[in-house]
Image (tube, rainbow, N blue to C red; front, side):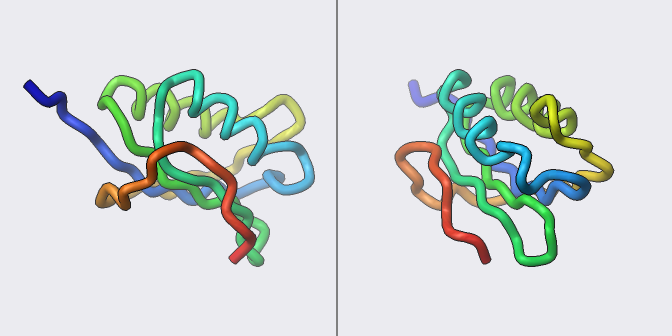
Length: 95
């Protein structure tokens, strides 16, 4: 039987660029066996798509609200998303 997969799109606002946020997010996501991607946005935010088991996705979303030690997350915009078929979790180029 195939397990349920959840996908969330998040936009993280605050001091989230120049603090190792993307590398940290990749490490956190891979530890949780998630798929998707993370990238910087030109507006200074970080955007991510996380795909996986519902509990792991929820745990990652909570971790993203805290961020790595040097980050200062001010706000997170979260919405349901579709599975884009990513086979791993990786950094995408800035958009």
